[in-house]
Image 1 (spheres, rainbow, N blue to C red):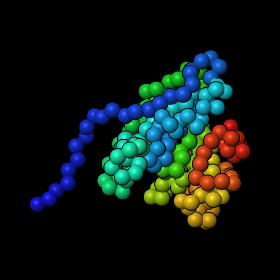
Image 2 (cartoon, helix red, strand yellow; image 1 turned 90 degrees about the horizontal axis):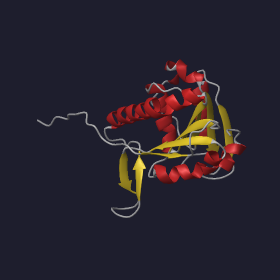
Image 3 (cartoon, rainbow, N blue to C red; image 1 turned 180 degrees about the vertical axis):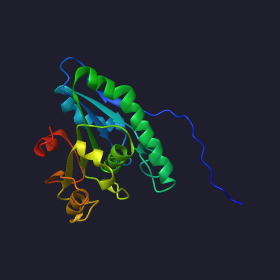
Image 4 (spheres, helix red, strand yellow; image 1 turned 180 degrees about the horizontal axis):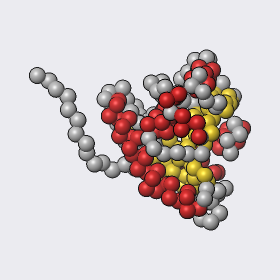
Length: 216
């Protein structure tokens, strides 16, 4: 008889940093990449923040895959539909470990805020981490991505302690025209008051757009 089993294992996770922690560091940013992206490339889109006094962390999804076919460029993913509950548990534990071992101690020592941003698939990842995990951030940004659809956000009142931003693109090829409103209502129906912004463009992110959205 076929039976499915699970066994916890220790594995090595990769993350990148950009910027240095100094007496003049303004804030810490945690940026979560999208599907088939690599953290080392993704974090470079925020170089302007590092140059202006922020310290950035970019954790990488625990699964890697070829971007096209079976060779060539490689990207990472946070999860797939296969054995998703195990993958979610693993990345929540991973992000919590990074947060409490590396990030929060630095923020407390220097008395600075911690912000977290999830782009594309990273948005759903961020929403699960901040509800199912133990980390608390000052500001959370969900950019061109869906909040996790299988959570009842009203069950997580501590999530209200973070300033929530939802950012959408006017011409995002991955979502229908009613997507922004549905995402905003998802949180409002749970008692949240997210700040929302729609920019002219496609499935993209950069610091200039973050400025237009009033996030930095």
